[in-house]
Image (cartoon, rainbow over all chains, first blue to last red; front, side):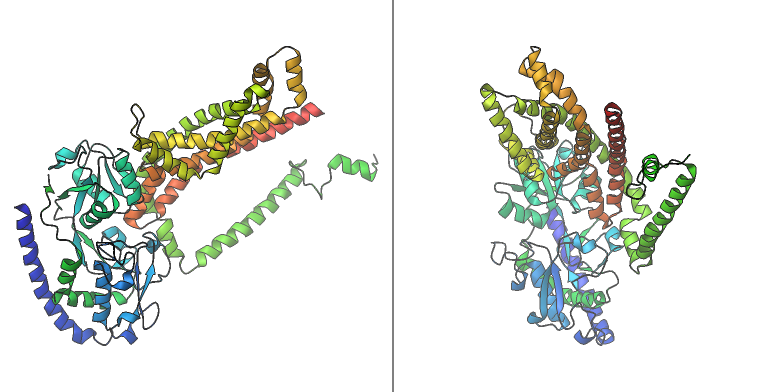
Length: 291
Length: 290
């Protein structure tokens, strides 16, 4: 029931956003048309849009959920890969003019010039990160979810109180840790892992009861990475702390304004929503854990 | 009083070839200090000036040396660092004991001890040959996954166990070098007065051996102090991991500087102590031989 309500609210918001987006696109295209010509853009390699993602890049962000085109953003399959090509097309680039480079998650935060125009690998927009790099407008809103084995102590959890004594694990550099510490607040400190592989091992070794990850990582983990694991539930996202993904730009990169325009246009004409529907499994039907 | 050139050299030492360790007069000391100060100033000043003059320095400073981030991350890093301290103290105590036992087992002679020697050699080869990170992952995740009854499944426990497993092998080799450095006549003499092989090792050879290898043991200890941080791969929230978490959250590296300072605060005193001890031993040996 709760989910229905949330979905309805989300739908209304999307429609409103879409309506607003229309206006934006209409008013700004005339003013910014000149500066957003390919020839005028500040690009790492002139005439080419250099896009960065992780290595390897996982479905559903890159490649199809059944494993086809795994780690092949050039295929344009997967939500982020498809979004990158949609943005490129919106900005006037042909598919051949999109070049992919790979970066580690941390590499993006080293001082110095970047070797990409923008980077997309599920970077959550936070105020702290915004001091070091620039983010685009959000292209996706995310929720946290709990992954565990069906026989785990947390398998039947429905409230935060049920997780009070749980030993939870997260992957480093995700907002899931903040979510555990600020919202769930279990007694035991959450364990922090470098990779999902390590977290999986800890889960199998019985060192943690469950894993907190964002919902679409949860779909991938349960479907592909950790055999036998299930999504116990998704967590209620507090309205004050939305978890939204943004494209990362080098600090002060003027390209951002043009990419934001393209993103607004994709949102306005429904492309963004269509891509979500195509690549990201609908999150309905999951139980919700709340306070 | 006239001295021959050779007597003069003998008296003051071969100055040009071997600068003396401690200056003999205040004047020379003052001059030496001045030269040291100037050369230090030139070298370090030059490097610092070069770094600070870079256009990108303010950005680097903000990324790595930001006081606000330092203050914000330090309490978390410190709380995690205490776990590092506990780990390396407990691990070192067991490493010293196990390493010595292994070295002694390997030093026992005679055909009856052959299987023991084979086992210790196999263990040392294995533990030294495998990357420490693999050992930690293998023991930290692998053993608990077997779900054997009565075996702890704590990541922290097995992480420290892996460190001990690896370091005890290196330490055994250090001890063995020490045991080999004790002259054969010591062992012979001990045997000749009726001590058994084990007794002569324990009462005669080992005390001299340990004394010879203390600097090497301390060196291993310093190395361990940093390597304990590797258990962070098992999800353990020690100091370096806390710094890592802060870095991932804020995109700022200053938290690693906070961790580095803490690690230096424990390793530098041990290094200076090693120097002091080595010096003292050398003086002792020189006193004995003259």
